[in-house]
Length: 404
Image (cartoon, rainbow, N blue to C red; front, side):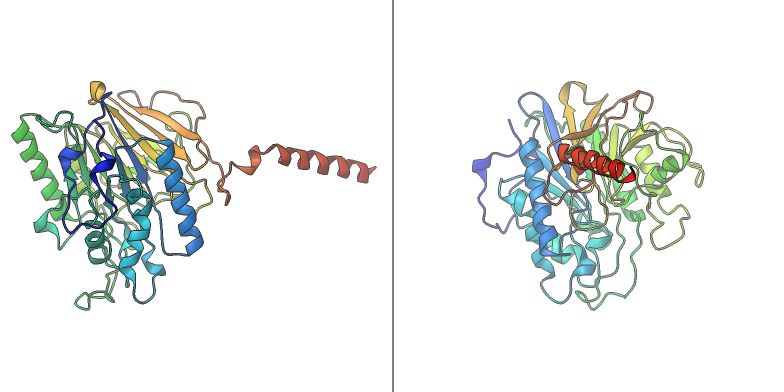
């Protein structure tokens, strides 16, 4: 049974949440698919917002995801002036609401700025919708907006999969939305209290169900291990994907990196059954890697954890790569051993399909990824257009005649 029945929800904004973890189920053929929309960056201008919604609708049409994850930087808060801060999130989620698509969110550094409060202007607005999956830890509300929920294979049984969502924070305190806040930047790493909560909550769930539950984790700013992997050299064949900019990891945005996310990385590594993590933030990267080496800065040894970027989805924000969204496909029969993932691009093509399994990072995929440039029409790269080759040939012919 699909996770969300289209007849179950209306377009109204309810006062209470109607979607819970048991509404998210594996399909009849035993699969569960997630689409990740990264770095949407709404509010920079109306044209970009309209194009971003076009990308979202195209990908939602091409894929059959039970859940969409909005993985940070939903809104460019630094572009918002004056009032109306809470209006933008309704534009962000409109392509999802149109088709009654279930979604969950993390927030990024651009989601907290002088005129944008992620709690008041985003979270409180999102939770009005019936298809927003929300599991917020009350005692942590002052620190973060973090959640977890559990897709089920069988409504009468234990959860088949845990999905963890972390707030990597960053940005600036929303002083224009809350006068009690102190002006200044926010720390751009997962808070220590959240790490403690995560470790304890996971232990409680393991105890409750008698065994570790396979899981995935989502957060906006990548962990420092991704920076160190990139510094050693990203393999185009073993870890295919675009690699267009230096990783800006947790703890290195507005401060010098001194291991601020060490506790978080250790907690991830020590989570039995954690299949992969997913982050964004760096718009021109979309590769995955398997962390099985030491980090030089903190001497933390990887245990084979898969770490992935998504793909820049929004037309807001920098980069000129073709927009898209990472897809995650899990099959109930091999849930504990592998995760299939690929990038669906705005033109409908697929980039960098890989399988995150025991041999990922050793397997050779060939050059299977696309670094197409954006096209304002949503079309394919101009370098693939037949007429471009004609113009190149004609220019060469004219130049040859002129030189004669």
